[in-house]
Length: 263
Image 1 (cartoon, rainbow, N blue to C red):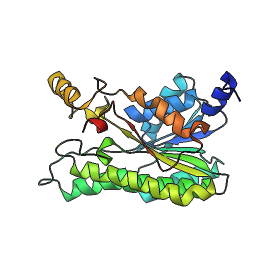
Image 2: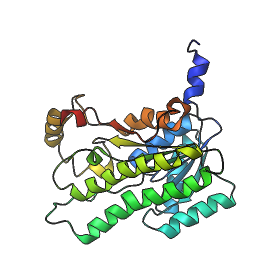
Image 3: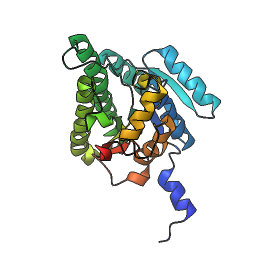
């Protein structure tokens, strides 16, 4: 059968689907939410406070995306449970979940504190895990779904000094993605992850403090010759959330300008 424009549209369309994005007010979350909405999805924009979630929705709606704000503090199981209870009461069952909420607290392995360790793991790993779990419980009774966990190149390689705790949390995300994919495939739930390289967001400001630092990092680590922009995740998230990746699960897709292959 020839590949026609209508077939391509159907492969990548998210029309009629609902996508929950955590950390939707941040740079990567906002970009992914816009991409999902542009592909036709209704977006549930969640963030640590209802104010941040509403701000995310305001931006999405200004760009023509149907949006529902939702407060989820990824550090709190009570917040996660309450958020899904709210969705249940409203009859909203996400077809797609993008686990984007995260934190980057950098310190050396000699100096990292228990507080930094606990905060990083509670948001990057624990929050990701239990948001996915709650979503999968709903998806399993409704024909399946797609879960995209946002990891990092730090989950695959050492991405610099002062990264041990962050990298450990993201490596764990890569692994639980595989475990979830293995266990939940029988329910029609596909679970994949995206591993971004350095992206130009507020979270990476301290990693790219000057143009000189950025230029050196690009010269030594990024074959494509530039730091990533949030929009560089658009194609990856649409692919993993859509029928285009119908036979893909347990995979981590690097979006890093070639950083990992340069190591």
